[in-house]
Length: 83
Figure 1 (cartoon, helix red, strand yellow):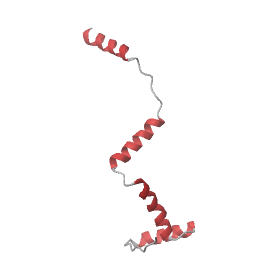
Figure 2 (cartoon, one colour):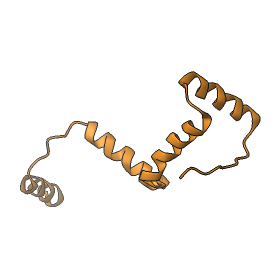
Figure 3 (cartoon, one colour):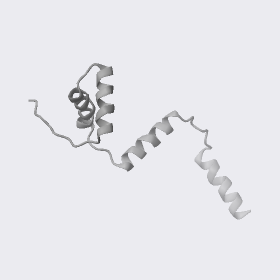
Figure 4 (spheres, one colour):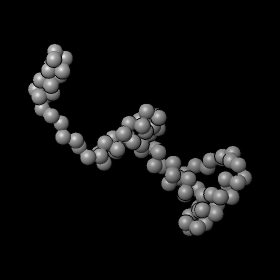
């Protein structure tokens, strides 16, 4: 069910949005609905959630490094400590 909504927005924003909607061939209402509809499904993200997503993306894109076996690392640590 559609319902009317009144917003208070700066005039410059209104002009910009109207021009963009006209270029896209949609109404301002439809554009608003599309943008806000995407938030409806996702919910609101906190700064920490956005940071975690960016970190996960960065980790997925990075190359994995070759690590030494745990026992070898332990032996090297013991040698350095008690040498």
